[in-house]
Image (cartoon, rainbow over all chains, first blue to last red; front, side, top):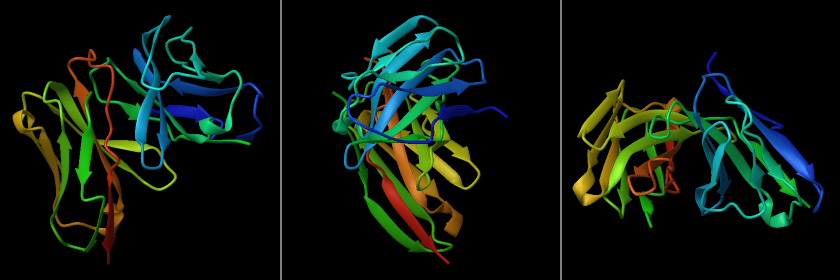
Length: 112
Length: 114
């Protein structure tokens, strides 16, 4: 089944404890992206990747890192999480940048 | 900077009604526009993608229209069912950002009652 998977689905952590949210797609898509969703603000792009080893900042990149060493994986790294990073995170992928985007199930992160 | 507005923010209708969800965007230089539905606690499901050169796109009971020059798109749902209850999001993709980013509205929350 073609899909985008994220792990973990739920995470509660404390300020400053480094964490990684994984994202994987099995559709051989070149483009991948991370979004966060907050009430009243909608979905906002954090980082995106046009292909392996090609990443760039979205609208709200502060406090996040990404890497794209393999085509299928696009992990989101929070080096020192803070409470304002409490949010619902979505990974998405598409064959190319302008094509239909497919979203993962989301990761609900709480930073205490 | 592209801004997207969806009206109404919430809508409650009885089963069987035809309904229209509205999406407006400020920058008409878009490459395409995608409609999604989001169920509570779940991810986004792509419904339709309409290219800037298209006026309409249809999938089953769903029909999306696009008027790029006026910065508007509508999602028409025919014969609504309780299973259509969800939040509907529209997201244009700007030409100026190199097609790489969807800009989302805050959605219309739809409740279809039996």
